[in-house]
Length: 464
Length: 77
Image (cartoon, rainbow over all chains, first blue to last red; front, side, top):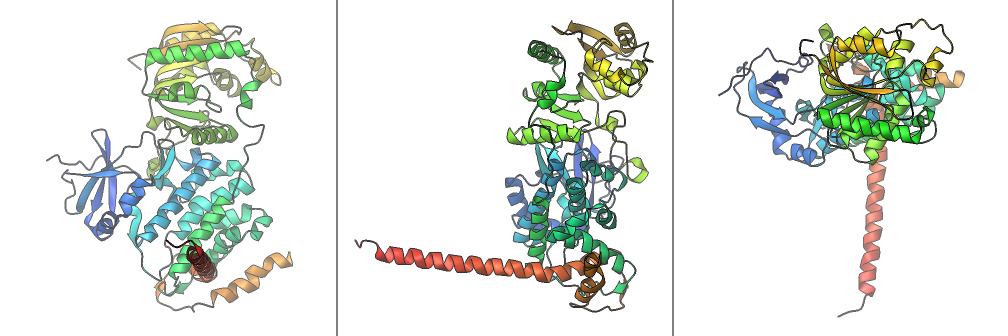
């Protein structure tokens, strides 16, 4: 029997003594410790797990016959269905976080029907698989004890309700607070930042504002924790109230609906069509199984890949573009594309304990292919990044690259230079090609009809 | 300003002392406030759930009554 190694334990998996997740031979496994047996067995035997899998709320798993490296702790080892790309809440749009919150509450409601409850409610227990949010932590369930309050209530408010309320009522960019607050947004901070009018919403008044006050009030008090009782009806009432609170939060990405971003380019319809055709040809030549579209906007070019069934991550810096992209995915029931928020000039770093709990963007790569369309001029001119450094970044995150060079004469580049001095003497096609050629083999290039732009197909050199 | 302070200064402390009183037993972490709040608002939201369940039963009873009387009125074989 194959023996598991302990060196593959995933760095984020250390808080819960019920088990741990580890990586071995290209697969993620989860060990269930004996201490969790009395909760794992009812989860599986009550029919709850089956019901959750049928509803697509939890990741399916199979029990595998592997011998644990820590047999004194082990009860079982399971192999969950593998998540193609791990993403984090600070990379999600408003509706992605909202759907993640509603999925968590659906899981909790279903658990209660089977006499169980969630013992934690971390936003990191949700991942996007095949286009939909899914609960991934099999160890989060415990038997429901009549009369007990919900132990994960505080975590749900910090990880879901507070950030959603801030994004909805104050500014969508406040979702980035997840980067600095690993255990969700502190409720006193959320309460301070939310507008006064949110006190007139019962959900936000009770679950955020009064919640923050009670946390402060009882922070240093000694009481018998067994005393606060919550009836089953009260328990259900709190979940219902959280659900209606989450459902009531809205955010409008603004602008006219769907795809008006592409109106603001200097492409004619013919050029745009030609560009799509060349990208499709280059993708066919690469034949990748994963694509990262960098600066994807609402994902028009991402869909050239994802519509072929290629796993595609569609990154953009604009929360409105990512939101529109996600809503389109939901509308079309797409399973191969995941829109994510990313500022490529400051991509997600490794955060948490020893900077290892949540992976950096580069750690989650490389992709088989990356698209960098109408992007180079933003990185080179708006962010003053030399071509050599841009090539270096791309060589870290992909094996093949489809990149568009936008010359200085292009009106979009001229617009970037309109309010600043042109210090970019090296911003030329020749310099672009020679710097990229250090790390990539320039296989093909194709000028786009009716424009001055050029598309390149490049492959990373073996030695890099 | 005065109105916004009302929940904090008057209503909250009054509510919090309703379902239990403080007992010195164990050191409590800040999560305790969350347990306390649930005990308080649970009474209110639980009542809504109970009313909802009761209302559904009434609706089901009336619907049942209505469909029964309709069946009785139907042609006999």
